[in-house]
Length: 287
Image 1 (tube, rainbow, N blue to C red):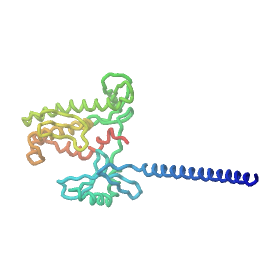
Image 2: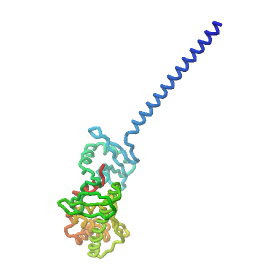
Image 3: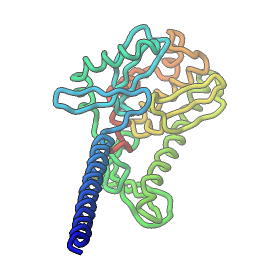
Image 4: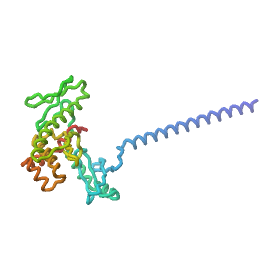
């Protein structure tokens, strides 16, 4: 009996030891899996790059995404800042040069960081913000309701926009600005069209990221709604510019002669856009 008892006891002890060892192994496995999940979270926390993008590291350790594009018309590799998308763009003449374009951007990390920091701060279309309308700053004011927007003249004009809910405010402001831009552009396009003896097929006012306006081969004129925030002479220049394209689909001397015929002092509007256009693109781009 003593032998049997010792055997049972020894067996029971060995069972407990094995169970304890298994529990330690399981705990270790859980810890390892947790560690893996944590490491994956840390790895995934870095901004994921879209196809056609690379990253450069600035002197202060910040990582800045750079968009890589191929433009067969480009004669060489270049880097520029797109103020509308607020990002750096590296251009290569072919796919096989994309690697060199990325390296080119990396070598100019300091310049890219400096130019991005110079961009105007984004302005949200939210109550209390200040946005220009025809060159004059207006305070955006929210009121509950459904009536059309209106302007209250004061030392500082206010653009009062009603909406059933404040969450709809930005959309209502944007709609008002687009409507105002369309009214002004229809008027100026009609005037310049008579001057040049042309007739556009249609006028569109929308969000344009890479240009202020365009003229299609079938006579459709498209304009950025943001131009209504500029002084009126700037919108007038843009209208004359696109109407002239109905006669000349280029930027030759003949084209600029047509623009001058519509608007003899067109240089003022062109120069204003070149100097201040990025400020208009900052509106509605708060981040």
